[in-house]
Structure formats: structure tokens, C-alpha cells
Length: 263
Ligand code: FAD
Image (cartoon, rainbow, N blue to C red; front, side, top):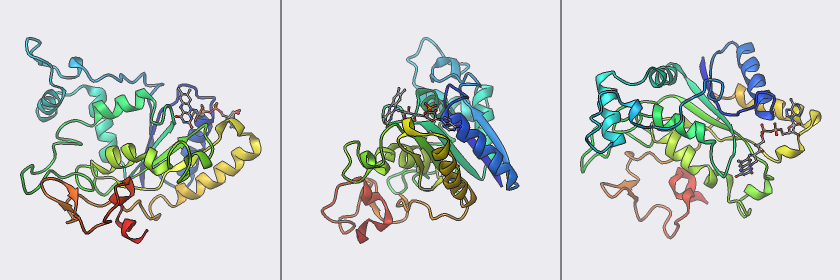
């Protein structure tokens, strides 16, 4: 299978660098084709700005979505953006690997999303009307592909548990897993979290690699997070609020999972 690793850490001799090397070697040994976008090494331009939209009329206010739509439709996007979009289309599965920085991804990776997820590619896809608010949240350009976050954290597992001070991990990752991955169509696998990174030594690194290998081996068979599809009947249209009989009385992010009625 074709597997793309989007990797964001500034130091190759880091824990993230070691996990990256392990994953690449393991996936290749299992017969997969692997491509890597090593964002710091590529000196990825993170800011979405008028330089990304050739032909933009500088007399007019810069509207990023309108300009993105124009250059995407015209085939006039920057080469680095086109290359990343082609890698996404090539991939059967995409792994996003990064250290958690301020409860999110490093800015260089967010900038990759801002620029590669063009209007017409990752959003603004499909009919947009009162009856059908786009092919998104489970549908779209990246439908049929799997995605997984590999995320390292200084915090402990308990800090990210259901009653942990940092918030439950899947809540913290909701904007990424639901907003960035599920929105353009990815089937989203549970994340591979590495907690308490300050305490990693050789023995723990070996344990981590064993656990990671198991997740990599099951990339195409593990059950995904059962996010509700926008257009599968659970949401009122066009308000796109969950229908009142689903998870009644609940307002937490877990209601957007199809198993939320069971909990
Ligand atoms: P490293 O520092 O490179 O390594 C961690 C440990 O692993 C070291 O002891 C190292 O010796 C060991 N190690 C590395 N490679 C190997 C190997 N091959 N074999 C054996 N041992 C090895 N944490 C949170 O929980 N939440 C946050 O919101 C958050 N925000 C942050 C914001 C910023 C700006 C920064 C800098 C850090 C933040 N952190 C946060 C902590 C951050 O998530 C961790 O520092 C990071 O995940 C550690 O990953 P690393 O690759 O940088 O580890």
C-alpha cells in the first residue's frame, strides 16, 4: 500500500526523529511504498499569503478562500502545494507525526494544512445548497483513505484521561481528527499517543517501537473512530445540528461519534 508520512519536528536526533525512522523502516520492511514530507527539512513555507495566489489583484482586499479557489481551478497553485496534494492523492494512508505543542500541532504543520488544503481540494467540494452542505465530514476528496496521528506529549496519560486536567486526548485532538482529517473525507484511526516523553529511555523506546509496530501493522484493519457522517441523516440540514433524539441532553464532543448513544 502507499503510505505518506507528514512529519514535523525541527531536530532529527529527537524522539520524534527516532520514531520517524522506525516507522519508515518498519513500513518498508512490510512491503509498503513510503513517501515522507519532512516539513522542517523541506523548509516548508507555513504562511498562506498572496504569494500563494499568482495573478491576485493587489488593489483588492486579499480573500484567501476566493484566491485559493481561483488558483486551484486554474491549475496555478504554487508547485510545493501541488506536490503535496499529489502525495495525498497517491496515498492509501497518511500518518501525521508531530510533538504536541500548546495542545495542537507545530505551526509549520498547521501551515502545511492551510496551504495544501485548497478550496476545491479539501473544502468547497460538492454541492452547497440548503439540502446538501458540501461533501465533507466523511465525504470529499480524501474519502477512502485512512489517516492517523502519531503525537508525542510531555504530559502523562492521566493528564489526558477523561477527567484529566489537560482534557481527554480525543477532545484535545478533536479539531485535528474531526476538523482537519474527517472534514475532507479521511477515515480517522485512533491516534498513537506517546506520553511522558521526558522519561523515555532505551527500554521505554523499545516498548514504544513494539506498540507502534502493532499499530502500523493494523493501519488498514483497525476500527476507525466512528465519527458521524454529515450527510448520513444524523444532522438537521442546513443548521447541521445533531437531531434532538440523538444523544439527548448531551453537549460534549463525543456526541459526534456514532457510539455516543451507547455511553
Ligand atoms: P525529545 O526531547 O527529543 O526526547 C524525549 C526523550 O526521549 C529524551 O529523554 C531523549 O533522550 C529520549 N530519546 C529520544 N530518542 C531516543 C531513542 N532513540 N532511544 C531512547 N531514548 C530516546 N506537552 C504537552 O503534553 N502538551 C502541550 O501542550 C505541550 N506544549 C509544548 C509546547 C512547546 C513549544 C514545547 C517545546 C513543548 C511542549 N510540550 C507539550 C512538550 C512536548 O510535547 C514534548 O517535549 C515532545 O513531545 C517531546 O518530543 P521530542 O521528539 O521533542 O522528544
